[in-house]
Length: 434
Image (cartoon, rainbow, N blue to C red):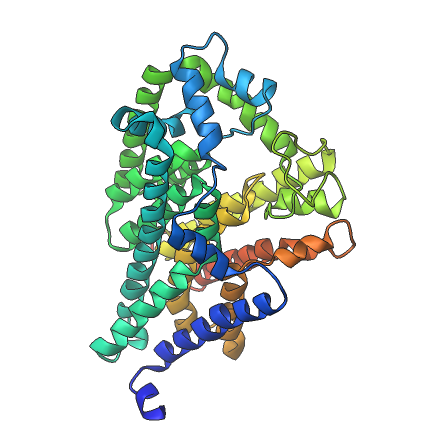
């Protein structure tokens, strides 16, 4: 056994240890405690079973628009019917394309197939990214073909066992598209496909408009080809959406953004500054999600959300821009993570974006250990926390221990800090690299 293990590099053995302990071991412990784990999510994924968390309100919105409504979409669906449809009209182009191609009765099945494939694509792009970044430097390069294949297999296992990605699927969430697009986006950037990355950003922004901030990021980094591709693709998608659904519903969407940004969500899987503050101040119900109501307005939560989110985005956009790492993949990842945390609502499954970000950080942390010998163990613990469900934390709602319910947010904040530190570690004149 020792002779077999010695065939592989220490890094490969470390990845194997993480899969055994951080994924399989943690889930065995959770199962022993009677907690829902990755095994159940994998069973649902393997069986093709998913909910309708996004699909139902998206179908309702699409049906209302194509019927030629007399009232703006969000005035009727969001404010009158109290259906939490918070995606922009551009997101409905997906439903529109599927409805035009397949029969209405098969719509949900088609969405399920696409969702399943997108989870697989997220794993494939994340693993391809892992192989790419590890092989880019001698210190992390595989010993031979067998060592490299072992890493790829371990990467796939860890990717398919990443809870936020699986949860997006089993809920029936549009986030499966964003997770896959984000992983492809980072891979495109690492492989120097700037214009392709711009198109992928436009597709993400069609679902979540905050990704449009990447255009500002590109302007600050003088990545004009990327900016042009993102703006062009985004403009085309918006034009098609306006022609199909009309201007009124697009303008009406601004009222939804204002409403959600003021209130956010108190339910504990909301892993944002907003959710943390709601729970810290015991404002709203944190034990379950209400499909129709938001927590009551709280000035402190509102201001804290704005200030905290603004600080995160300012740090992400400004600090790396003054280093040799600007416009690099770590710089890009930091901004993507800031956009997630700064949102008033980001559920656990929205942190599927962490998977390719962890991949990017691994070789950099090996090369530049920020915490000396503790760096990789701390990093492994952070990845293990993000990889697994911690549903038992729901029991802390309403207690002084409720800050621990924001465990995933704390991991994301630590990851964000590490990314900024890695960028700052190569600080230099602003014109040191383009």
